[in-house]
Amino acid sequence: MGIWQSFWLGVLQGITEFLPISSSGHLVLGKAILGVQTHGVAFEVFVHFGTLLAVVTVFWNDVWRMFVAVGQAVRKPLPSHWVALYQRDTFFRLVVLILVGSIPAGVIGVLFESNIENAFSSPLFVSFMLILTGGILLGTRWAHGEDRQFGVVRGFLIGVAQSLAILPGISRSGSTIATGMYLGVERSEAARFSFLLALPAIFGATVLKSLELAETGVSRHEELVLAVGAVTSYVAGVLALKWLLGVIRRGRLDRFAYYCFAIGLLGIAAFGLHLF
Image 1 (cartoon, rainbow, N blue to C red):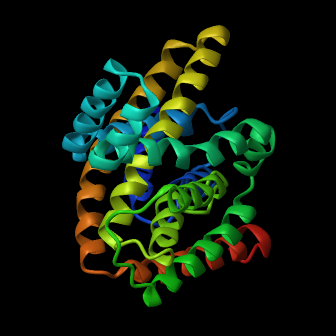
Image 2 (cartoon, rainbow, N blue to C red):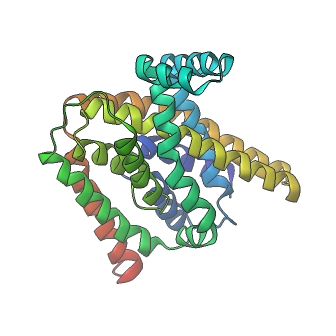
C-alpha cells in the first residue's frame, strides 16, 4: 500500500466510522476499488485507533469525568461503596454500563477472530451487510426513545448490537444507536453511549495488534503507512463526529439507510453480478 492510498483510506475511515454507513465495509470496498492488498487487519485496526482518539477529543469532558469516577471507586474498593457510587454518580454508572456492553464484542472477537478476518476479504459479503445496515437504520424512523438514563440490561443489549458490527458492512454506530432507540433510549443519549462504548473494543484491538506487529516486525514504510492512516482518520473523524451529532439531534438517522441500500446494490452488481 502506498502513502497516498493510506491517506485516502484514512480519510474514508474517519468519515464513515461515525456516519452510520459502516467504516469497515467502506474500507473493504475502497481497497477493492483501489486494488490495495493487505495482510490481516493491521491497517483497519490502526485507522480505527485514529477514530478512537477522535471520540476522546470530542467527548473529552465525559472521558475525564469517568476517569475521576473510577478513581473514587478504586480509593475505596468496597462493594457497598461501589453500589452507592453507581446509584449517585452518573459517570461511574456509565463506566459500568460500558464494561457490561463491551462483553459481547470481546467474546465474539476472541472466538471468531479468523472468521472475521476472512470476511474482510469479501466485497460481496460487505455489500449484503450494507443492505442489512440500511434496514436497521430505516427502522429508526418509527423509534422514539425518551429515557436519558438506562440500566445494565439495555446496556448489554446495545453491546450485543456492537458485537454483530464486528462484521464489515454492519455499521457499529448505526446498529448501536438504532438498538438504543428501539429499546426506548433518547437518541442523543443513545449516540453518546454508542461512541463511548467503542473505546474499550477499539483500544483492546489496537493493543493486541500492536503486540503482534512488535513480534513480527514491520518495515519503515509499513510504519509510515499505518501512521498516515491513523492521523488522517483522526482528523476526518473529529469533523464527521461533530457533524453527525448535529444530525442525530434533528432526528434524521434513517436518511442514511438509502445511501447504504444504494452502495450495497452497487457492490452486488460490481462484485457479484460483474456488471461493471
